[in-house]
Image (cartoon, one colour):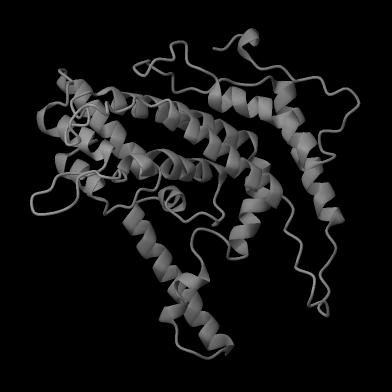
Length: 322
């Protein structure tokens, strides 16, 4: 149980209104986000046993953030002018909450890049094929940091759930979510009317069911969606972990090994995992090896790395998390 001194207190705002503008709102909530998502572990080394529980904020601060978000959305909705059907020159105003959502997306991206910058680096003096494959520091770091990042993202998701209810849900209802009508447009015959509308709705249901079977869970499909598609905040955070941390580590470095007959994994993370699965990768304890392999498999799944990715297939074949 956390003591009161572990809770981040409500910062003084004086007479300022945190909901008066986006800079004022962000200045009020960012200390809470930093505390929840970025507070350092007791031991900040790569091998630290990072707790998978995010630090909390004081109840009064939690309520203050909810009130400020509510007031900001309400004021933005009131200030948005209704669109005129005869005005073809003025672009429609973004819906209330768009700016907050975009700022949160940028914040998650920055936090994820910070984690990548802190990852153990490969020794450039070693042979490229080796690339410290038998040094488990990278896998240990990623599994621990992902657990901490996810705990923080879950807390942010709950703290700012008003954004999910008022912006994300509306965007999904307006066909701006992870699965859109455009994704099935090429499968539909031309024409309009009620029959065509019903056929389009049926195709969307079929595609949704197929995608959920492919991904296993909607949150994974959301995290695997392209940038610009509106998803709940937890999936948004996981998508940024994939794009800013995992994809650079899975990418082939310039001058690195290329494909060919009998070629092994080409990305740094894939080579480290290959060594871990085949000969221990420098991890002597079998239980720790299994836990790390399972941790990597879960990390790839939850962040939306595609199910047919070679590393996911390798881990599945190995029986990680079985």
